[in-house]
Amino acid sequence: MKKADPRLGVAGLLTGFLLLTCVPSLLGQVELVQQTDLPDDLNVEAMHLTEAQTLSLEEVTKLSVQRNLEMMKARLDQASSSKNISIAKSIYDTRLGSNATYTQDNQERASVVLGDRQIDSRVDFSLQKKIPLGTVLGVEAGTSRSSSNSSFSSLNKYYSSDLTFYVEQSLARNFFGYVDRKQIEQVRLDIEKFDYETLDRIENTLAEVRRQYWELIWASENLRIRREDLRTAQDFLQLTQDKLELGLTEKPDLYAAEANVRQRVIGVLEAQNLLQNQSFVLKVLLNTPEVDLILPSHKIEFTPRPIEFEAELDTAFENRRDLKQAELELKRQGIEVKIKKNQRLPDLTFEGRHSSISLDKGMASSQGEVFAYHHLKYYAGFSFSWNIENRKERAEQQQAEFQLSKVKKEMEELKLMIMREVDESLRNVLLAESRVSQTREIEVLQQMKLEEELRSFNLGRSDAKTIIDYQEDLIAAESGAMRALVDHAVALDQMHRSTHRLLEKTGIAEAEALQGEGFEGQQKP
Image (cartoon, rainbow, N blue to C red; front, side):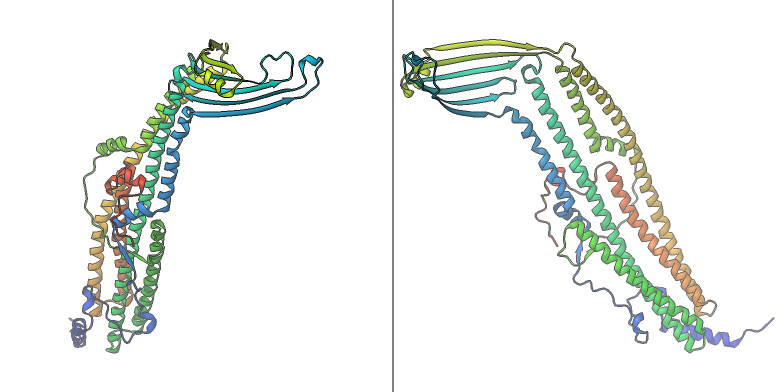
């Protein structure tokens, strides 16, 4: 049997001394110690983050509702849509009319007794209003003046005044304002549908803001991981230099260690750039250009939770705004069928008039006599018309019925799509939970693997390349674990989005989301 080389024992003692005195950070995380003997380009300055604005997830959520430009545009569209009800009700507006005419006729007549001068002037006023029963009420008043040099004019220069009240009522088509009221109801349904659409746009934008915040957390944690890896690489480079001076390693190991540090420097610079880019993305979404840099203060917590598909699906059917819009569209289309059916009826209209007329040489006396109601005139009549073939009306009714059937099919299709989206979002959450658990174990194993290999390196049984490869494995494991946490948070938000409960889960009432208010006490950056 070969005897042990005594030099190996001496090397082991020296290595152990170095391990205890020079590199206590290799087996645990410590603050970066500035290496005075490293080249300047290997000592990367950390980003100056003292001027950064730190925001929590709750603050970002509420700020987005207040300041996000896309949400503001959605609310403006909703406010504009709400005015359609006033436009629809304008058919009931009171209308004021006025008319004034003056005519002077000096044409030569065939007989001298007819005269050659005739002057007529008239002023009319009218008020008309339609009420929800479809009844048109109106009043007309007017005064005219006539004068002539004709020998046949017994009352030359006279004033004629009249006052008329009238009413019109549809008795078949648009029976007592049926179509008018139904069309206004359709407008109300359209506005309600647009409210749901606006809320959906706001919630979708909110989901994107939160996703970008999770990405900001990822960028921040990635920078932390890269800095720690750089510290570890710098410590390993120092250890390699010390071992080289003692003759315990070779120059290729030193070269590999320095190249490793330089690669880690690139990683830190890239991570800093990624953090700045992600901060700018969030600044745009929050509409906060006055902030230099946004950093997250939220810490991701992982808590597995039981999820039941049937319960989530029931919640989705209860809360999904697109399903509520489809239900409103179904109701609206049912009204459209009734309107088209009513349009097939004939036009039958009743008209009644009550007039008071006066004639006098004075304008004031003529107008005053009108209200004495001495000279009355009454009128009542019916008008009727009907398109016997009714081709257009029948075709439009059939089109409305086809559209109603189509909306019903679309609702069935939408329910299937909701089932698929909920199922997919739940499976993504479960998958994300599994990834978090597995990547955490992988990170622990990779850390243990690196620590064991460092012990071997210090005993002369390993080389720099193996250590660097294991460091790469640990970096990938740390990044993978953090990425899994971020993906799990995003998956949870998407699950709430699939059931349209993200606003509710973030504590934002729908009325507040539509108004963009309710957060006056929230500190803005």
